[in-house]
Image 1 (cartoon, rainbow, N blue to C red):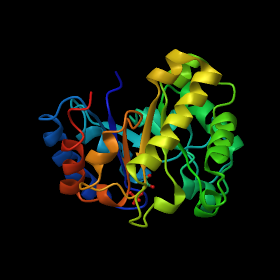
Image 2: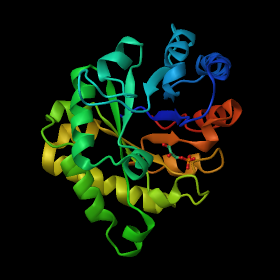
Image 3: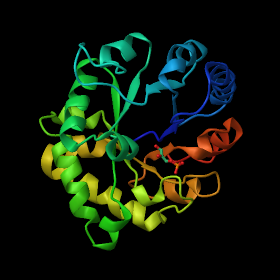
Length: 254
Ligand code: 13P
């Protein structure tokens, strides 16, 4: 059984001081919940602080990005080994904002994924279609391409340990959440492809979480779907009370 993963993607929000207060509070809450895994992805400036605040708790800490090279003249970038040494257990890879605003492609996503795995980080790989692609009935084809090219060369065992975040671009930060049926259709499709390309064990163990305007009042409906294994939460995760509520309402699935 897949234990639901609830991850807070803060994007470019929160100072170090704010991060410390938040992680302390969510760590306290996490002691009282069971059957869910909670992950927080702060900006890099707060990564070490968040790791320290989450020490001896069940909260996992994720980087929001990394570079695929081990080191080099790449001003402004950090490597997988650097975020691993800073204490991160996970890394978000290929978020649609990275793809749209920073030129990431399925090929660079693949290289980042390989780098994260080599550094022993748990990747949270993002896929999802734009509104134009959905309206042109291209959703499943886009997901096929992103999953096939993004995960190219991975072993079944590596795929089993992945978290894939289905984040329809039109639902991110818009308040327009996918319906539970739309999410389930995409998740079930992705899982079917994983089964076809990597085998049944990888497909059954891989977590597929939903992202895009997740809020306390829609998480229960989404997580009820058989192939929705948690959520990657942006805006609603910035408020620790709101994110706590989302975590609480996700319990009981496993
Ligand atoms: P919102 O929850 O703000 O729509 O963002 C989703 C997201 O991009 C999480 O990675």
